[in-house]
Length: 159
Image 1: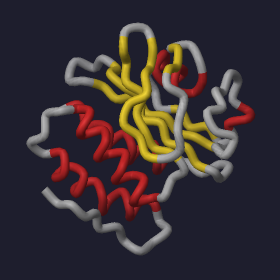
Image 2 (image 1 turned 30 degrees about the vertical axis):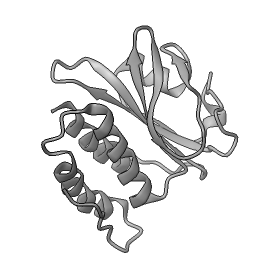
Image 3 (image 1 turned 135 degrees about the vertical axis):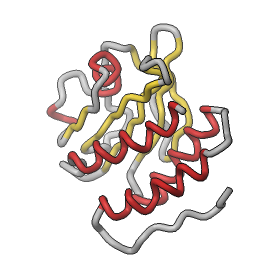
């Protein structure tokens, strides 16, 4: 297992994702504990991109409960019908929010968060077991490139 992450010196996100995906795959290879793997995924994404907040909310009974994350303290529990994370859970689809202030029902865990992307994490039976929540302190910071590659990254957690 590698203890360092090589990140290319570029501002092109696709190139960064292309470089880190095999490293994350290698990091997770052989480790069966999902929480440990989520922790390493959050750390790798934070290190590679410097996002404001990167973390997971894990499905527990009837809520999303804070899991491994990197960044400032966060909301601990989110109902399935609330906020961007709840919307991702209920729709089963990646959600890109260019301006969190414009998203109806947005939960403001931090006033510094300006845009957000949330990606569902599925198990091998296609049940949602968690969501990956990534916040930026910049408006309109996420695109379909992020959606495509973050879906590939969280796909590694279902194995």
